Length: 135
Image (cartoon, rainbow, N blue to C red; front, top):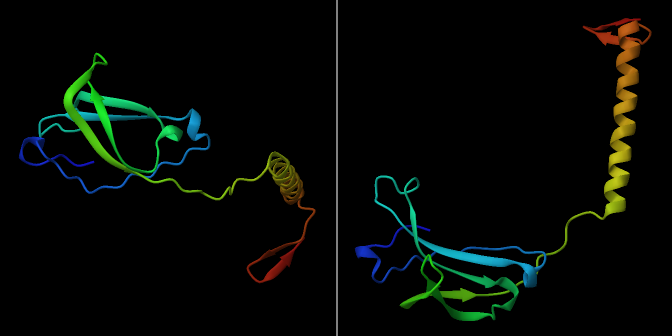
């Protein structure tokens, strides 16, 4: 997200982050707060606080993440206020058998194209070129 104004004492980011996890109860979300100077924001960013949570254990609604120092100890009065909402994403990926079928179809098409190229190189196929047949 963007940097907070006025020294970051009471920043409001107003940004939304969407996460998609196939296994939310086995997915760990790590949130970090970085500090950097304005000139080299992406290069010299230093992590000043973080927290990690299991994504599937976060209840919907407003929550606070109690941030920790780099050593892992909780920082007094250092919280990140977040809003959590859960949703379902339809499963759009093909099954393994559908993938195998698609691969076999593509292999067959590639073999047919290789055979056609071989015939073209030998000149045994009639080809349409500039309005006339050659064969």
